[in-house]
Length: 303
Image (cartoon, rainbow, N blue to C red; front, top):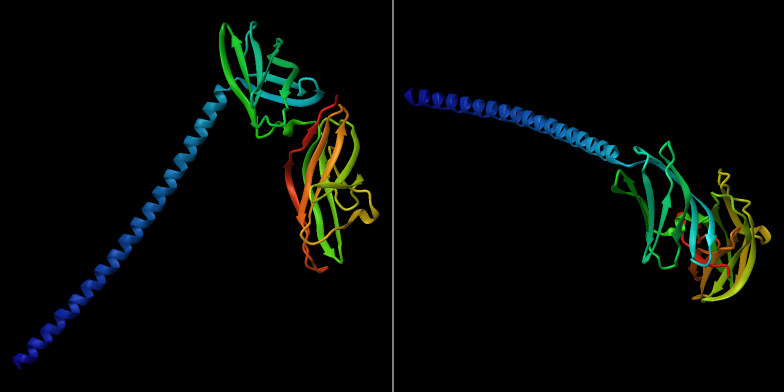
């Protein structure tokens, strides 16, 4: 009888212990969820504070700026100095009667500094010269504003290549194929030219290079298949039947296509369009493609 009583007591204690452990487990789970929830809330609050701090820093930077706004538009080419002439309109945020503005445009080892008059409204207007040497690299521009004998400098902007400011800019291209069978390459292609200052596009044409040698030139015309939706952009395609190139070549050959023209100032451009290494294909194997972004040209200066 005593043995049965002891077994019952032991069982009861074990059950109570199990219940206690389960209860503690539930409490620990709830505590963990509470801590996790608090941690997530803290993370959100920290992120919100960081965003507010970033906005505040941006506001402070904007408040310290000298220039409220500016525009830069190409107006000509100086072949002798190989520079781009552009019209700059700049609005100061604060100025005085004796304020002067000097703009510095620097590319590679070339630097051009232009003094700009400041009118009574704090506006500057004038033509500036921008270096366009083919190995100039990135372009940076800054202004030095002098008021009351104190000069303060501010960066206007930077461009990875001065060609981004040229009167004519290639901003995209597309192509179909190429297909190659029985010794002939077949492809259709076009290039989108941006002409922000509405200069003349003189003698546009495509050049076809085979293994580095120029083998064909064909005039360019408005593309029948690609539209731009913008008045300052035009898509050009080769002036061939169905605007499609047929070229005799063999497997292993390299075919390179460029687009060339001159602008109304006499500056010559040659933009890369596409390059392929020829492989045998079936009609349904080759695919088209496209690019979106600036393609930098090789420039030819007028004499």
